[in-house]
Image (cartoon, rainbow, N blue to C red):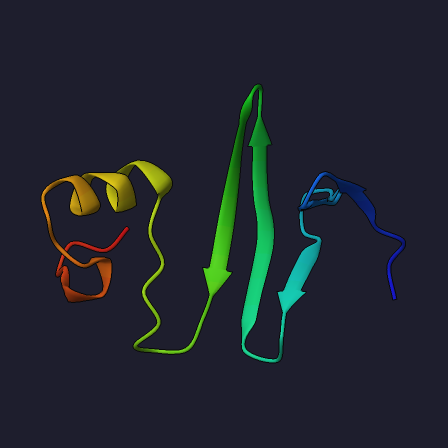
Length: 74
């Protein structure tokens, strides 16, 4: 098990390019690239599990929709 730091209620991890984070048995997050202040992540999740960028998720909520009903995932 990786030593983890907690800040408030959020788990904070340090990873390098190519390193992974697992959430349960079915979700894997990989650090694909770090370029300046941007981090590119790859996410593998079960089909049918919606994965959204926060700003898109908030937009769907503001428009009165339910995120799992949206066709525009990303």
